[in-house]
Length: 195
Image 1 (cartoon, helix red, strand yellow):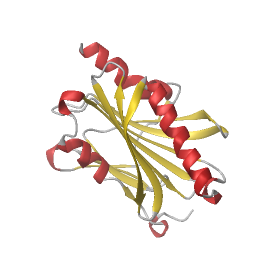
Image 2: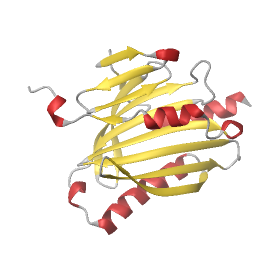
Image 3: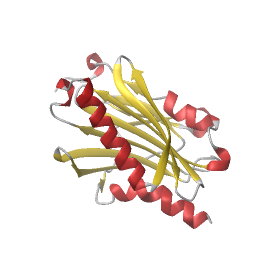
Image 4: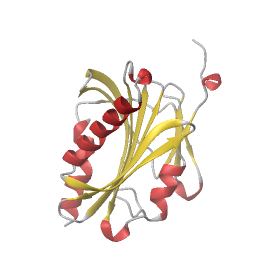
């Protein structure tokens, strides 16, 4: 049964399987309970993860053509009820000029792709605002009814942040799901070093 969970948890990772593993994270700090604060000044965010992530980069095929994406992945963290965490960041040129209907289509495309990747069905979809930026939160139940995938998408300018956590259904909505999602912070441009 555990191998079945691993296969589903790695569906997100497989999407990024041709990424190149980067030699080091920009900044990683350990915090209480062995969670790791990941800080990326280039992608302009911080987030808590249950262990140091594998960081990968690749070109992703989208409705916009190929775009560069960067992923941060943690699978099967010790002493954790969830089996997979990820943050994917990608830049979508021109999306910041979209009107409401176009933004809805943009987020629908993300939802449909995630639902197809997990061969599941959406059990929750809600619009969210993150620091006055458009976003969506989805919960997807896999077709075997064993896993819940919680996804938070946030569009900041032309940059899309997509956070995902995969949880066995029996541990649905545990405190670590919220800890992960609530820890996500966008850095202000003033904090970005000038080159």
